Length: 434
Ligand SMILES: [Zn+2]
Ligand SMILES: [Zn+2]
Image (cartoon, rainbow, N blue to C red; front, side, top):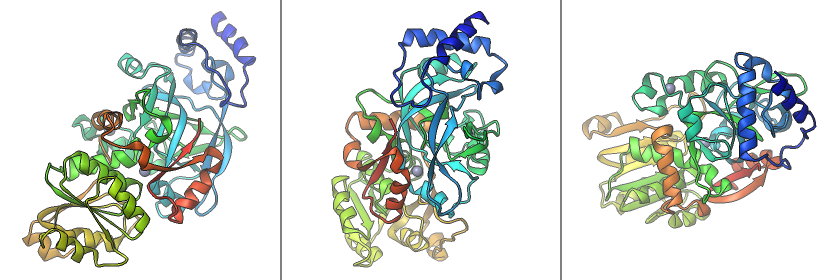
């Protein structure tokens, strides 16, 4: 207790209002202090949230995060208590967060989600704290001070699906995070500074200066990769990888069509190229996006606003259709087009989310007689895939630099989503939090 008091005295003189200008103590000092604080507070974790004396050395007491209150109202930046990680969870100093259509669906009220909440689910950052009693294997894999990237599907690691390695179907992630806006004990880690009121989390709630992430959702980011561009690895590239590796099982020489070449669709082009697809057909209605698609590996482009996409696609493939077609928009019209684009026995893969309750149509007889496969895919498998995805970027096989087209400051978070909504973003935008 004497040691704890000494730490408390030291902390009380630390600046707490601004995290961005704060310089971290040396690794040796902070590691020792973390252990002491954790021992002294063992079994008393709930009380740590509002107590500055229990925070590890170097951590401010408060942070800012962008809050979604209700549909079609702008995001507002609010002050929060620093979130506290629990066992098996990691506190991250967020460096960058990607701007994704899934968040936009929430902001527009198209995808129902608990509110108020902090959106943002595509992050990079620095490990600053391990939850108390976190397994040694985890603390060794993700040491304090390491750079990390977070997958938007944060697997619990032990449910029915996680046990089989199907992290993308994690029961806890869907039952708690997607259904309730919490982590897997049924509680959020976010509480407003002013009122103490809980605020829900869309995935880790990444549009914040700090966020808590279950360790299974994190992979080490090599220091050679930049924080800003690497943020897209956790959703845009993760989603593309899941679709190509597990749903489509793309093989060298396959023909692949990608319908919708935004952030996720253009990542699909790159992953298809990485997997050895020979013909890669990009379909969109914006010429600037199609121009850029060629940089990402498209061998053919189709502007669906100017020509019949399915007819043109059949023409390119000698009337057969493609081995794999991926729908990355989430629209009933393109759902149908996707099923019409695949060859007999081909795979139509769906990764675009849409408004709740939307229905897609399919020609039933063709589906039955010609053995068309219709496959949904939400994302990759964090524990197996995320390290591989990082390696693709590190080796340059996945080009991160051209994939990120626009950067915003944290204060501009709402503008970023407005621009995304107005189709102004070609490729992917990232909010820099630093
Ligand atoms: Zn996303
Ligand atoms: Zn699970």
